[in-house]
Length: 263
Ligand code: PAF
Picture 1 (tube, rainbow, N blue to C red):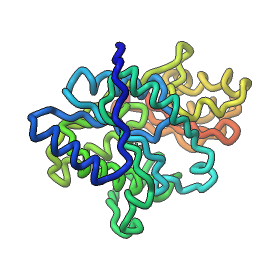
Picture 2 (picture 1 turned 30 degrees about the vertical axis):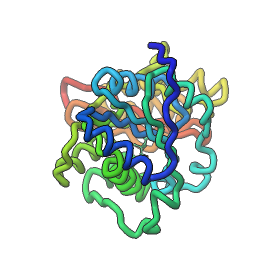
Picture 3 (picture 1 turned 180 degrees about the horizontal axis):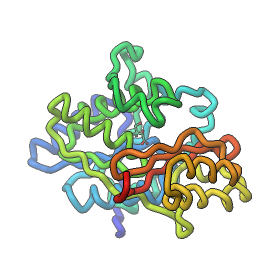
């Protein structure tokens, strides 16, 4: 899709609120795609759905410090604003919200959203505080943009479930839309982190989803992944879905696959 109009870049919280209130007053439906930038085909799929569903689409780009438990990981997170704005323009985004940390966390992160069950499992067990940071910033973004719909990828399935749970728990008046994982031709889930894999690691990486899908049990998947040289954080089965996280070098990859039988 081609949209010749550049999106409006908004850095100030107050300005974003004014535009959002204005759009709502005109009866326009607002779609929000929250991201941390480094946009790829997975994000483009979310933006396309947003464009198709609502009259106004808002893309937020904010590398959220509160969700990084490892300062190295935060420092290394790719920042590719010029390319991101090109993707935004191509996908017909109306507003790009680019806040800074002091305005998003003017409370000094004293107030947080905490979930006490699912956020402690799977990735949460390996990244303490991560999902509190995600939920806190997502709630702030929902409050600022006041979207009718917000779009999340199934690659981050645990995040998606937690956001859904938060929306339900706090009676948030919006629809959470799940968008299927976008994969490379070799099956690797597209992620901003893939760019940090060395050529040799990139060649090995597709074995991760393949083994997750094919192994009869989670324990066997862990064994096979380790044999392939992956440093395994976890592989766990939940009803109808298998979740995994591995490291290749210092790059952490996560994925999940549907499992309809025997779990
Ligand atoms: O999935 C992400 O990129 C982030 O966790 C999100 C939802 C934008 C919150 O910072």
